[in-house]
Length: 262
Image 1 (cartoon, rainbow, N blue to C red):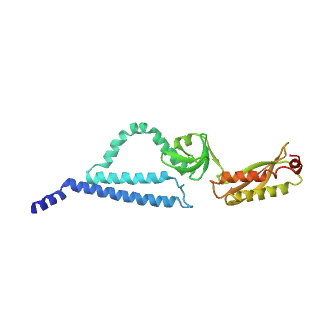
Image 2 (image 1 turned 45 degrees about the vertical axis):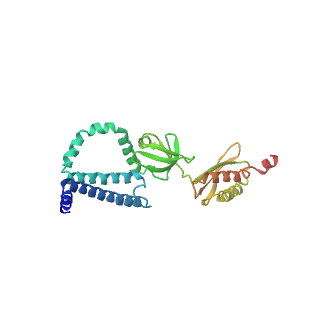
């Protein structure tokens, strides 16, 4: 029994066991700090008054920085590694490494540029390189958007930096163009009727957050061109609300003479 106790004591006091225990402790503390930093940043970035967009690229960079610092502390404490010398040695091979990860570095820098400058941020409706959709997230490598077909499209950040980007109106903003066929004497009445019809038809699909507003923009050979604009609460119901509104205003845009002859 005494021999077993001595063996156990010798095992516990062994250098490699103490080193392994130290490594586990440092990594556990690093993981805990990383979790707290991630949770804090996500909460901070989701605030309305945040100076930075709620893109995960900032969270990923902070998490990577915490783990790099933790590994450096572990190497210096447990294995007596001169971290400064190791970083200097890696700097010599940094050129070769950067060439190998050229696309990754380009995407990282591109993601930081579009995020820090707030060119795009989650919730924006954009069109880039022939793809249209709402920005879901900007990571260290790519930007994820959801297109009108509810498909997830992954676009490398470098593509966004090299191509023209168009910021489209929010998907909850609906604009319907129309042409009124009349002699022009009742345009105020027609505009009011179009607004009421849109409000009723779209309201039956989803909540209307901004009342319809109809304006006339041009006189053409076909009649008086105009558009009606309103906002809805649900972006997923925007297409259905648009269809309902178009169907509702279609009869209103035709004059009484045209309807009677149809």
